[in-house]
Image 1: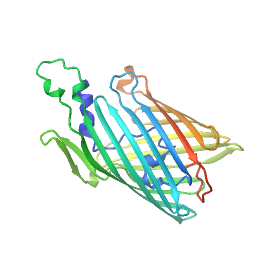
Image 2 (image 1 turned 120 degrees about the vertical axis):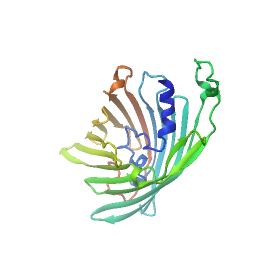
Image 3 (image 1 turned 135 degrees about the vertical axis):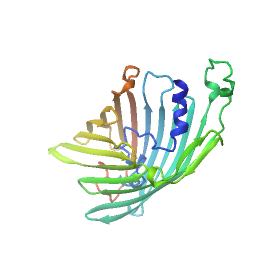
Length: 300
């Protein structure tokens, strides 16, 4: 069973990358068109520990940042992420570019992302039980594959909507050739649709509903339904339901004009629920504030 879990990243790396529970706080992690949309230079750090209670469960650390330039017409961003699942490690580094125009009373952004993904498996860290499995003691070489993404993003003072393809190149590991095989097949792409809005419900209270749909031809549609309440633009509380058998709780706090912290607890009620203690994620974001002409930069 452990070996099966370790092999999963090798066979599925060409599929949709794991989604952070904090994607609503930092949509640039799923859509390159969001780069620069906050109107200020900001850096975010995420740490996610998934399936607490299972040895070798996924851990992800991410550093992301973006900035608006040329009177907010251009956005630039970066994402560096390190994933570890069992004895398999994956590191990705991506840059994002967005071009923004005024459209329909809001801002329409077009985004492109490009980067590299490196992955390797440290078989020597496994404990061999059956004689003859010595071949597993040989670590894999480091594989490097390119990564490209595309996105559209629209926002005004009350609503936002984004459509993205987070991976334009697909790849699967070939044990016979001992390398990854690259291909581009729109019928196997994953498409993400993210939308939401903000509504005043009291003088200092806002309601922020949003949804995220993930779909690929011939596969099951996945979705998250999120609901947040904002109090005095300082404290956010919310919850989310996903049809991938998970519910999530969110809390965010704006400590001052620059620093925001957030925590997410993800409870899965699928077949693994008796073995795990949920998943945890924390986020710190620091904004280097300066005057910028941006649409609603602090909400979306």
